[in-house]
Image 1 (cartoon, protein in one colour):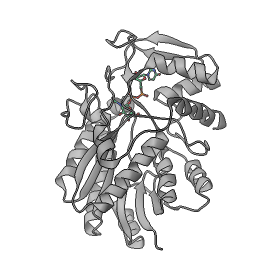
Image 2 (cartoon, helix red, strand yellow):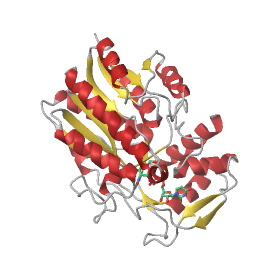
Image 3 (cartoon, protein in one colour):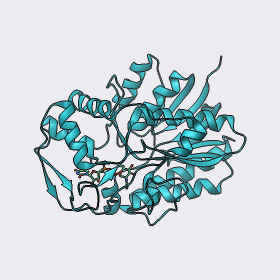
Amino acid sequence: MKKTDILVTGGAGYIGSHTLVELHNSGYRPIIVDNLSNTSLENIKGAENIIKNKITFYEFDCTDEDQMNELFELENNIEAVIHFAAFKAVEESVREPKKYYDNNIGSLEVLLKIMKKYDVNNIIFSSSCTVYGSPDILPVSESAPFKKAESPYGETKQLCEKLIDEVDLNSISLRYFNPVGSHDTCLIGDCSADKPNNLVPIICEVAGGKRNTMQIFGNDYKTIDGTCVRDYIHVVDLAKAHLAALNHILDSKKIKTAYNIGVGKGVSVQEVIDFFEKINDLKISYKIGPRRAGDVEEIYSDNTKINNELNWFPVMSFESALKTAWIWEKNK
Ligand code: UD1
């Protein structure tokens, strides 16, 4: 039977590569477009190794309309697009906002134009809990308003969701909380940035000796132990949520919606470090530093909507996320 073609922009990235595996395992044919600007070819090779199959890969920038046109000419059976390709470092977005607006919004604009031209009517968009800004009610649900974004990165995610809302396409925006961990083979993972900005990759670098120490950004928040609280979702669960969203969008006649994807439980920065030390049986050198600009005090997900409508539930443990994150770091 012919497989359904799914275009995965940013498919060589951290979440993209995990999603390739789930797509293939469920009988879809993923096609990657990625400029490898903030990831590595190793992730595609890793995914191919896991699924024991080659994956079609186009290496170029999604903002390049001519090349996108060529791709859609060649691949004329695409049924849906999962759009991951974007910059994602919050701090960098504060320093270089234009880079974020140009790339994150620019690539979506090109994609929407080409999808319309080639009559591809289904898009799954990689959004973020950052669209809520600092929410008033926790856990935060999809009906919460978009408050002022804490960073240009956050603003691009809000604008992209609004852009998608305005076009006549089936769309699902997936609002990720904090993705962590790796596939259990540890053949794919987070290859972004020489100097990671996210908590778990930084803890791993301290554990592996790439960094001598790290800081907890603030311990004077109004939270359980004074450090910021986040909802850490295993990247394999997150990849499976894309599959559930894809099945749903392809089954729907008309759909425009958004889902939170988290675990539904808040964990503090201090708790993440303590747990990492315990399960990996090592010591992390850290000190308490000042608050980081743009940080939200506390955020975690209300998953009721995706549980009820897509029957998606997180099943992976936080323990396995922190173990595989550490193995991935050691294998790098
Ligand atoms: C942010 C975005 C999220 C986005 C992600 C991508 C918000 C609310 N969230 O996540 O949507 O997908 O970036 O990169 O904007 N921390 C330390 N020390 C460190 C590093 C981090 O204490 O060295 C703390 C941070 O202050 C934060 C927590 O760890 O409280 C998690 O930080 P991080 O992993 O960078 O993710 P977010 O900023 O939550």
